[in-house]
Image (cartoon, rainbow, N blue to C red; front, side):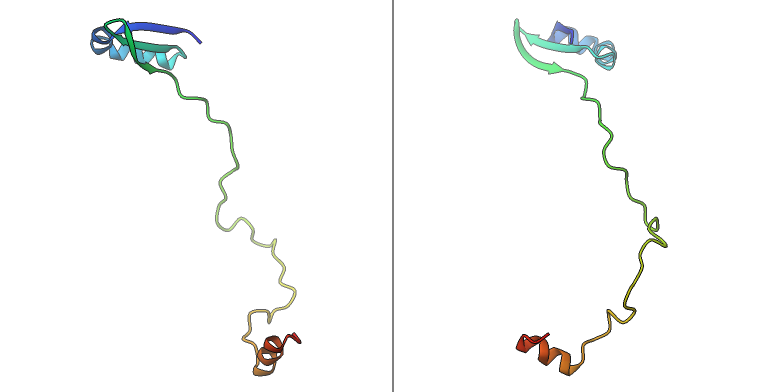
Length: 86
């Protein structure tokens, strides 16, 4: 990666051109009184991640085996669960 060194005064006067250089992949080192104070560099390229999930795309893929799975438990089932028999 190329690094271009400029003074703070030059950076202030030519910021649009420096930003164009950064867009092209160059880094810019800004110095004041020959002492480096900042670096402007391009952002790292984003790697493709997981695709964004959309609501409703799983329609028809879920099969419910027991249609009564969400029914409330009976008193006998609750007692059996609490006693450890369930």
